[in-house]
Image (cartoon, rainbow, N blue to C red):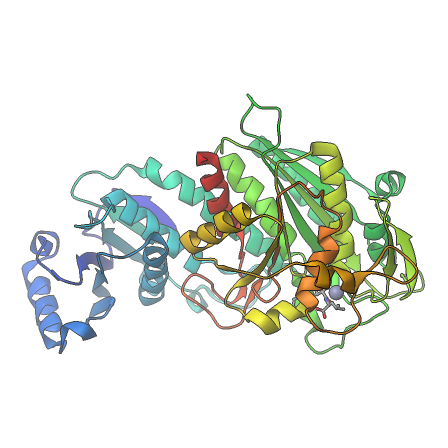
Length: 491
Ligand code: BES
Ligand code: ZN
Ligand code: ZN
């Protein structure tokens, strides 16, 4: 991981980064920042580029053990794009020991030098993440060398500006770390204990263990964990940022299936290892509360995560079993691999009974069907409220984690009616699998409560690295929800 610093020396860095706009190139005093001969070599390199359209975003002048990098930005650049440029920059400079960026105000934009530094630094932090704890044989030379990236500007940068984004980067790392952990190392019990440790940030964390869950009647959730040797937990995480109000502005609900073998409806073995990540939604919820606490968001936010392992065994739920959910609705479980909705359904009921939140967002690696629909580019959104849809979509665009809305209506709702119970956990065919899953969740939400379900299956894991997403767990959703909460805070 690369450390971000501010206002340290620019001269001693191995990689020196300058920023120009596409129009002006070096005309803003680069000569005062780098020495004359380097300036001339950089100028010559720029002149060798053929046409203006070919101007690269990142131009590197490689020298022995050193480099000067010219970052070019267009004056229509967005924050998300600037962050992505930071990620791309990281991959070009990661093998230098130190780097320094000369930040500056971008003419004809709202970007101050601080804002430019913040966006680039955030991109570098996200791009430099790696999960190395299980390597015992690798040598330091096998890893990227970049230890620090220092930001300077003509005037001293106020590093306080970066605190919010630093907290968010930290939260994304937390979600990625949790999601990368293998299921033997992150059982529901270990996971719950980890979340309990968030209390040191001022969050209140309540754990419900198996016997408490039985007493309360989380029967759908328990039907998932009953085949596993690892007992379930539910964690409730409270951030009371607005002490003046008694209301809960929002509830965040996360699917935390620490391993999804499918239960008796066993999954095929090829690729089953990916199902250690079936708790990604819960990691996003825990990380979002962590960020909210560190950023002192002026909102009352409650998170709930259902932590279970879905295994086949002699005690496992059988296809055809009927359980009575916490809401009182009876549910026919026809496929034990459609378990996420069972876990979330009881969590949704509980959080409404106990907290009566003004709105609810759940997030889950819920269906393979959403991966077929959207691939690894966008997450699916299902909601009963147009305003919530709008605010979530905008937040996604701002954060660079985008959503695509799907429909919910009675034709789909009909598809999960059961012949012998209130509802069933799958529809008859595979058609509209992500929508019928959302309809199932909707039946546990009070009619008048704005609710959105985000299906992040396919987004939880990066198979082809992107600038801000190294291979492995993505933490997708943390930036999106943080942006959403910040927008909500302003409303
Ligand atoms: N955890 C899976 C969904 C999933 C699939 C996540 C691929 C990430 C990548 C979920 O519990 C599941 O198994 N869903 C089934 C539902 C089906 C049985 C109705 C599915 O999508 O196949
Ligand atoms: Zn499943
Ligand atoms: Zn699952």
